Length: 326
Ligand code: X1X
Image (cartoon, rainbow, N blue to C red; front, side, top):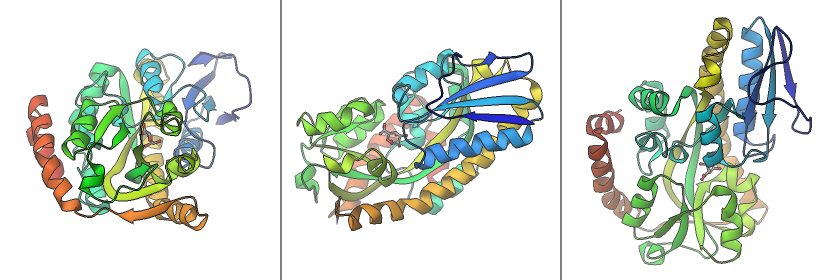
């Protein structure tokens, strides 16, 4: 098989899937980050695996460093089946098209890494995937993720008093704002690519993110105080635009589905392993100061009713219970 990977700097005049010759197919991917980040490495792994499994010609044109916008842009492109064919996405950045998908990555859903791992391996997320496919025309082919999300702020936030009224950015899904409001913060949904400036100019005082992304995009320059709320372990579907997928030869579809599962396992292992290392690198470089959050159990108490109400509204109470009981 012939799989070519086009570097970020190479200009390619294709829009989404283009048959450059009778047999050559080009698929365009998008990453927010450079080659060093686990998402980009996972997408490179996906490309490699598809190339190995498929007997025809595929060209991969992966655009890095947020060249195609942030995830709120990716989701629109993926839904329309133009400009982006594959990406890794936060479910909470896909809420516009499928309101139930952010249940997968709502804060305080997983007890620990083992719970996260078991839940993802169990297939329990299948109804949410089905809704995403039906409503957004976006297909989940595997799960990356595994980073732990913590607060990152300009000033230290060590307890609920300091968190009260704390102006912070959250992802676009309403459940994200509801959960951070419940723990007394003052959340606002701001586009990811505006967060750095918004903190720098004092529009907000911080946000929440995982170590790999704080390091890759140098958020520590404006938000060097990390509070270990450990409120989320990331669930990051590897997704494909269904409008593109449907047009592909059957053998390539099969290769993509298999490769998605394997690349997901690769990505989860990489990101969860690197998470602590990336934090330590930033500590060692004097880029961040890390502190525990005093009274994390209190946060849990505050969010559970909000999670329950959200699931009930979606008719997904059983699903939430199924995830919790894994
Ligand atoms: O907060 C965001 O919007 C982003 O944060 C990190 O960069 C990643 O988890 C990414 O997927 C997105 O969630």
